[in-house]
Length: 215
Image (cartoon, rainbow, N blue to C red; front, side, top):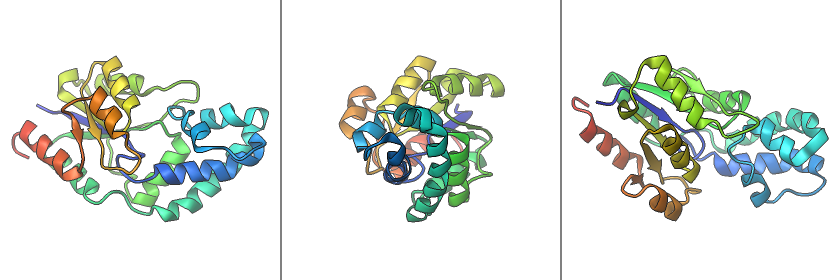
């Protein structure tokens, strides 16, 4: 019986990863002293935007962070909606009595901007955001389980990254890998999470219906 499902945000709920990279490059590069490459940016993934910016901007991180948020919000107009079908899936889960939470590596402010752009700010029972000093999704999962008195086999996490699989293994919970986004590492997901990779939201919905009677 599923009691709680938590979703990742970037690349799972919406096609936001390319926009995040472009916003980071535009806003933070002047403080890094050179144009940041996509590789430099993605190597900081797992930290929230404060931690990411501290890695590349050093002592100028506060100024860079100040400039980042308006650029991020403006660029979000390029990605104004979540993936088709994701809100419907979440509403279906909630209608079946399943708690639905969000666990993201994003910081609180950028997460809030994205959820407001998507009209999803009131959709989740809990929103757990990232830390600036370390990847913290495994800790966030354990906090959710304790807060809602849910056993590990009553929980699923849905995320698009190999690091999500790693976090779930650390927390001792199952991960369902979202491979419907343009930036998904399909080969990495299939290697790290075999038989639990989904290439469409519809496929994931079918899988969850088979698991949960009454959906």
